[in-house]
Image (tube, rainbow, N blue to C red; front, side):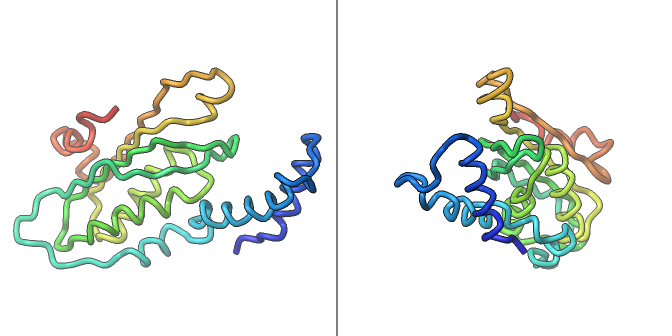
Length: 189
Protein backbone atom coordinates (compact mmCIF):
# COMPACT_ATOMS: atom_id res chain seq x y z
CA UNK A 1 0.00 0.00 0.00
CA UNK A 2 1.25 3.48 -0.82
CA UNK A 3 2.01 5.52 2.34
CA UNK A 4 0.71 9.02 1.53
CA UNK A 5 1.78 10.50 4.87
CA UNK A 6 5.38 9.33 4.39
CA UNK A 7 5.41 10.78 0.87
CA UNK A 8 4.14 14.13 2.20
CA UNK A 9 6.91 14.21 4.82
CA UNK A 10 9.60 13.40 2.26
CA UNK A 11 8.35 15.94 -0.30
CA UNK A 12 8.39 18.57 2.44
CA UNK A 13 11.99 17.55 3.16
CA UNK A 14 12.91 17.83 -0.53
CA UNK A 15 11.43 21.32 -0.66
CA UNK A 16 13.53 22.29 2.36
CA UNK A 17 16.64 20.71 0.80
CA UNK A 18 16.04 22.78 -2.34
CA UNK A 19 16.07 25.94 -0.22
CA UNK A 20 12.33 26.51 -0.56
CA UNK A 21 9.87 27.45 2.15
CA UNK A 22 7.31 24.59 2.17
CA UNK A 23 4.95 26.78 4.23
CA UNK A 24 4.67 29.57 1.67
CA UNK A 25 1.35 30.06 -0.11
CA UNK A 26 2.19 28.28 -3.37
CA UNK A 27 3.84 25.29 -1.68
CA UNK A 28 1.78 24.77 1.50
CA UNK A 29 -0.38 22.06 -0.07
CA UNK A 30 2.27 20.68 -2.46
CA UNK A 31 3.33 17.70 -0.31
CA UNK A 32 -0.28 16.48 -0.07
CA UNK A 33 -0.85 17.08 -3.80
CA UNK A 34 2.29 15.15 -4.74
CA UNK A 35 1.29 12.28 -2.43
CA UNK A 36 -2.14 12.04 -4.09
CA UNK A 37 -0.54 12.21 -7.54
CA UNK A 38 1.97 9.47 -6.66
CA UNK A 39 -0.83 7.28 -5.36
CA UNK A 40 -2.52 7.63 -8.76
CA UNK A 41 0.45 7.41 -11.14
CA UNK A 42 2.16 4.57 -9.24
CA UNK A 43 -0.99 2.50 -8.71
CA UNK A 44 0.51 -0.46 -10.57
CA UNK A 45 3.31 -0.91 -8.00
CA UNK A 46 0.98 -2.68 -5.60
CA UNK A 47 0.11 -5.46 -8.09
CA UNK A 48 2.16 -8.30 -9.54
CA UNK A 49 1.95 -9.11 -13.24
CA UNK A 50 -0.09 -12.18 -12.31
CA UNK A 51 -2.58 -10.07 -10.34
CA UNK A 52 -2.96 -7.65 -13.26
CA UNK A 53 -3.56 -10.59 -15.62
CA UNK A 54 -6.29 -11.83 -13.28
CA UNK A 55 -7.86 -8.34 -13.03
CA UNK A 56 -8.07 -7.86 -16.79
CA UNK A 57 -8.20 -11.45 -18.02
CA UNK A 58 -11.80 -11.51 -19.27
CA UNK A 59 -11.74 -13.68 -22.41
CA UNK A 60 -14.21 -14.97 -24.97
CA UNK A 61 -14.12 -17.93 -27.32
CA UNK A 62 -12.10 -17.08 -30.41
CA UNK A 63 -13.75 -17.42 -33.79
CA UNK A 64 -12.57 -20.41 -35.81
CA UNK A 65 -9.35 -19.61 -37.71
CA UNK A 66 -8.90 -16.32 -35.82
CA UNK A 67 -5.83 -14.48 -37.02
CA UNK A 68 -3.58 -12.13 -35.07
CA UNK A 69 -5.17 -9.36 -33.03
CA UNK A 70 -3.39 -6.01 -33.20
CA UNK A 71 -4.07 -2.93 -31.08
CA UNK A 72 -1.96 0.09 -32.01
CA UNK A 73 -1.30 3.50 -30.50
CA UNK A 74 -2.23 2.81 -26.89
CA UNK A 75 -1.09 5.96 -25.10
CA UNK A 76 0.58 5.56 -21.70
CA UNK A 77 3.10 7.39 -19.57
CA UNK A 78 5.41 6.15 -16.88
CA UNK A 79 8.34 7.24 -14.73
CA UNK A 80 11.87 5.97 -15.25
CA UNK A 81 13.30 4.26 -12.21
CA UNK A 82 16.72 5.88 -12.65
CA UNK A 83 15.71 9.55 -12.30
CA UNK A 84 11.99 9.25 -11.51
CA UNK A 85 11.64 11.33 -14.66
CA UNK A 86 8.57 11.23 -16.86
CA UNK A 87 8.50 8.86 -19.84
CA UNK A 88 5.87 10.44 -22.06
CA UNK A 89 4.38 10.53 -25.54
CA UNK A 90 4.52 6.74 -25.35
CA UNK A 91 2.66 4.64 -27.88
CA UNK A 92 2.28 0.94 -27.17
CA UNK A 93 1.52 -1.42 -30.03
CA UNK A 94 0.37 -4.91 -29.03
CA UNK A 95 -0.34 -8.03 -31.05
CA UNK A 96 -1.15 -11.59 -30.12
CA UNK A 97 -2.26 -14.78 -31.83
CA UNK A 98 -5.34 -16.24 -30.14
CA UNK A 99 -5.18 -19.84 -28.97
CA UNK A 100 -8.89 -20.52 -28.60
CA UNK A 101 -9.56 -17.29 -26.66
CA UNK A 102 -9.66 -13.56 -27.33
CA UNK A 103 -9.40 -10.89 -24.67
CA UNK A 104 -11.57 -7.77 -24.56
CA UNK A 105 -9.84 -4.98 -26.48
CA UNK A 106 -10.22 -2.46 -23.68
CA UNK A 107 -8.51 -4.95 -21.37
CA UNK A 108 -5.37 -4.74 -23.52
CA UNK A 109 -5.24 -0.96 -23.02
CA UNK A 110 -5.91 -1.40 -19.29
CA UNK A 111 -3.04 -3.90 -19.02
CA UNK A 112 -0.69 -1.42 -20.71
CA UNK A 113 -1.83 1.41 -18.44
CA UNK A 114 -1.51 -0.58 -15.21
CA UNK A 115 1.94 -1.95 -16.12
CA UNK A 116 3.08 1.63 -16.86
CA UNK A 117 1.95 2.83 -13.41
CA UNK A 118 5.21 1.71 -11.85
CA UNK A 119 8.76 2.95 -11.70
CA UNK A 120 9.84 1.42 -14.98
CA UNK A 121 12.35 0.94 -17.73
CA UNK A 122 10.80 1.04 -21.18
CA UNK A 123 12.33 -2.36 -21.91
CA UNK A 124 10.78 -3.87 -18.77
CA UNK A 125 7.42 -2.25 -19.53
CA UNK A 126 7.34 -4.15 -22.83
CA UNK A 127 8.30 -7.36 -21.06
CA UNK A 128 5.66 -6.84 -18.35
CA UNK A 129 2.91 -6.17 -20.89
CA UNK A 130 3.94 -9.26 -22.86
CA UNK A 131 3.93 -11.45 -19.75
CA UNK A 132 0.57 -10.14 -18.52
CA UNK A 133 -1.16 -10.42 -21.91
CA UNK A 134 0.26 -13.90 -22.47
CA UNK A 135 -1.24 -15.07 -19.18
CA UNK A 136 -4.53 -13.16 -19.53
CA UNK A 137 -5.21 -14.34 -23.08
CA UNK A 138 -3.64 -17.77 -22.53
CA UNK A 139 -1.32 -17.53 -25.53
CA UNK A 140 2.46 -17.75 -25.87
CA UNK A 141 2.40 -15.65 -29.05
CA UNK A 142 2.64 -11.98 -28.06
CA UNK A 143 4.51 -8.99 -29.43
CA UNK A 144 4.83 -5.51 -27.94
CA UNK A 145 6.50 -2.46 -29.48
CA UNK A 146 6.79 0.78 -27.53
CA UNK A 147 7.94 4.17 -28.81
CA UNK A 148 8.42 6.89 -26.24
CA UNK A 149 10.18 10.06 -25.15
CA UNK A 150 12.11 10.27 -21.89
CA UNK A 151 12.44 13.54 -20.01
CA UNK A 152 15.72 12.26 -18.53
CA UNK A 153 17.04 12.79 -22.10
CA UNK A 154 14.92 15.74 -23.24
CA UNK A 155 14.83 17.99 -20.15
CA UNK A 156 18.21 17.22 -18.53
CA UNK A 157 21.56 15.72 -19.43
CA UNK A 158 21.94 15.72 -23.21
CA UNK A 159 18.69 17.77 -23.64
CA UNK A 160 17.89 16.21 -26.98
CA UNK A 161 14.22 17.07 -27.45
CA UNK A 162 13.73 14.97 -30.58
CA UNK A 163 15.13 11.67 -29.24
CA UNK A 164 12.62 8.79 -29.15
CA UNK A 165 13.24 5.30 -27.89
CA UNK A 166 11.72 2.25 -29.58
CA UNK A 167 11.73 -1.14 -27.86
CA UNK A 168 10.45 -4.51 -29.03
CA UNK A 169 9.47 -7.55 -26.99
CA UNK A 170 8.54 -10.74 -28.81
CA UNK A 171 7.45 -14.12 -27.45
CA UNK A 172 6.39 -17.37 -29.08
CA UNK A 173 5.82 -17.16 -32.84
CA UNK A 174 6.66 -13.43 -32.82
CA UNK A 175 10.31 -14.31 -32.11
CA UNK A 176 10.92 -15.76 -35.58
CA UNK A 177 7.96 -14.82 -37.79
CA UNK A 178 8.88 -11.62 -39.63
CA UNK A 179 5.32 -11.22 -40.91
CA UNK A 180 3.95 -11.18 -37.36
CA UNK A 181 6.66 -8.72 -36.31
CA UNK A 182 5.79 -6.39 -39.19
CA UNK A 183 2.18 -6.21 -37.97
CA UNK A 184 3.35 -4.06 -35.07
CA UNK A 185 6.72 -2.63 -36.13
CA UNK A 186 5.85 -0.98 -39.43
CA UNK A 187 5.22 2.72 -39.14
CA UNK A 188 6.38 2.97 -35.53
CA UNK A 189 8.27 6.16 -34.90
